[in-house]
Length: 239
Ligand SMILES: [Zn+2]
Image (cartoon, rainbow, N blue to C red; front, side, top):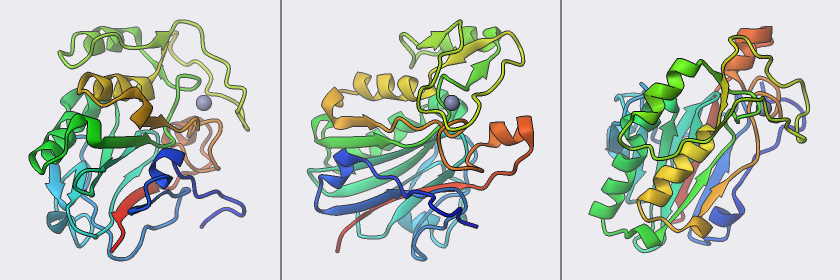
């Protein structure tokens, strides 16, 4: 159930494009009925909207629409990434957790949009609510694996847990003497490396663990068992 007062979040950058609609929905709220969405597997597979409708009929972590069908991804702590091509008016929704990001799901989505006539300079990207470095602890061994990935140049992380001044509930407590990893920044860096201008990449400053609405975080639920529900993020070209 939608919590009273749960906000539908949007990106100012995407909202400035009059030809599309989008939303980062709160936990537990479904996207429009006609939305295409893959059965997500933390893979780098990106498909066209017709392959992913009805919802979850194929395995994919990214969906592209070159028509006016809405496309969506569902996330808990992973990154929901919405992409708009201002040149051809195509859109994409991408589910980018750590695993999918390292597998290249963002590169696959951008490559497909370029195949359909986009240029890196014509893409506008919004990264929605996801677990932020204030709450995302990883074992130090993971850092070696991440740094060894050919798609990664300089991953951002902290040895001391960053304080989140926007937190509305307690931040995650350390469980493994690990490091605090910045997953949204990893995606941002990859998008920059693909030639997308920094001014065209919006990162919403909302951590699913400590500053989004309740039930947003799979990881928080694994720590304090207060439940979680999927968060859908969708984007659609207007008719
Ligand atoms: Zn947090």
